Length: 222
Image 1: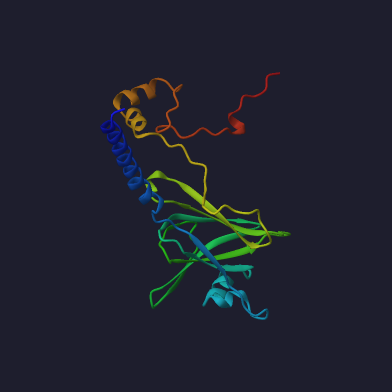
Image 2 (image 1 turned 135 degrees about the vertical axis):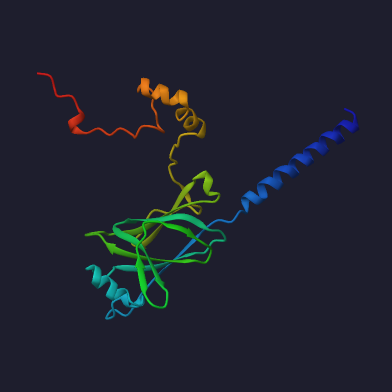
């Protein structure tokens, strides 16, 4: 084989490798969220709610008991997390947001946190379930870029031992959404006309999902 051909192929391979590295390296080092959990602790004679100013009075107003654990959750990664939610294992856990405008102090318990930036802190309250030997919390969030709707999660043990967890977030089961092409077709004049004529087609963007109720079932034949 001619040396010039070999040189051409070698140059092409080097160029291809450069393109691959230039694309892969920024993706590999893209900013991502990570979490650090710090449990609040006090003297046994002091209520745990005393570690958060005003929390004891707020719990009393709501008629709730003293939490079994309080955690400060810090985004120790270099990127933001979106639509953050928490699930408790062996406990009931929820976020607590405290805002003070100088006049009033507000206590909020959102089911999701829209965005948690790097170094931001979340306050988590947990209440042990009856006879629970292991207590853990699972943080679930959306990775960047959010338009891809990639939900991931990590589980952290509060009390007891849980199976060893992976180093990186675990992908959640992805939901299947109708495509924009399907939406445009079903909302076009033709699609709306066909929708009025026939219901055999699964009109996902026009009809609500069907749920089976006992009243909708056919009565058994005698």
